[in-house]
Amino acid sequence: MSRRVVVCSLLWLFACGGDDTSTPAVDAGPSGEGERYALSYGPITIQPGDEDTQCIWLRLSNETPIKVRRMHNLLSSSSHHLIVYKDDMDTTEQTTPVPCQPFTGALNASGMIAPIMITQRADDELLLPEGVAYTLDAHQMVKLEMHFVNTTDQPVEATATVQFYRADESTIDHEADILFIGSPDINIPAGASQTLHQFFTVPDDLDLSQSNIFAITGHTHRFGTDMQVRVGMKNGPLESVYAPEPFLWSEPETTRHDPGFGIPVGGGFDFECSYVNTSNESVGFGESAKEEMCFFWAYYYPSQGSKVCIHAEDSSPIGPVDLCCPGHALCGLVEDIINN
Image 1 (cartoon, rainbow, N blue to C red):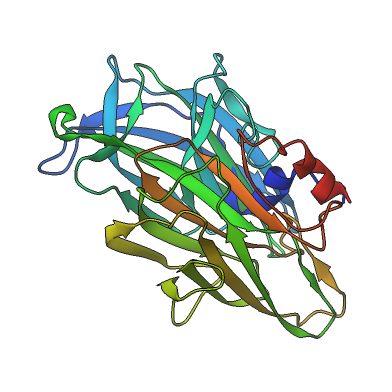
Image 2: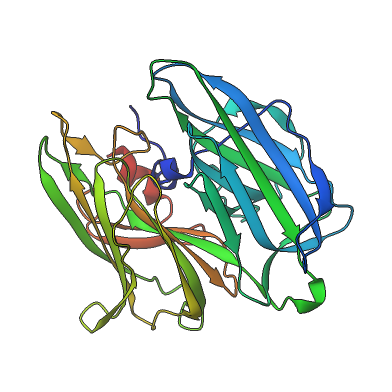
């Protein structure tokens, strides 16, 4: 399988979803919240053994700009991952699911396409801290990207529902965003147990020292048995911020932090993923369910944009590298790292 842009491959985890009958809806939200705007994807029929990433583009029915502090996603069992994007670049709805590359647009220099929620759980809710929200334009275009896989011997249906809850605009002071961080340096021999342990130093063009990182979700594929994330200086004391017990790759825990935390200037994320390869073939990095990943996504504010960040050593043609895209001068090397 040819590998895609670093970020795209990285994001098998963000699988996409689609449906040719999706229709925006609006109704009253829970007590204390405004209207609920809903988008649906599916059902689409997945044949035995099929695996793909497909996307749709839909407009919300909001007549005016809104602030969204709460989102709620529901996925069918075959809908492996879902990424919800705020899309300010595409202008035409596409209601029939079409094949798409994972995380398409994440490296877009204009920043006009950005993920706002990533879901791997069947029932997943994102509640941002008080005073923090996403801003959606009137009739906001939303891209839904679903990765689905059918491991059974019978056809199954893939579905997803995404719900946006309007917040009181007068209570919002900050804009939220997502960091997606990890490494493509994965090579697990057949039958082997292995741990990938790396340190991502935050590049100078991303200052997280005054940021509030308030939620983290880890991600591996089926051979993953554990994931840990710590923060601090590379050669100094580290603070654990993600250590689920147990870590479940298929339903990874989202750890919330209240108050949120920042990263000291010159510091970064110390992360590790453990695997047990029970297959009779070596396993490398990739978006397919037959390959592996070691990534985590972190929700933070105030926004400096949505970023996909990698630390690469073995897979880098220029030696160890830390970079975040879009916006980094070396983002053009991301594709080279994956293809090589």
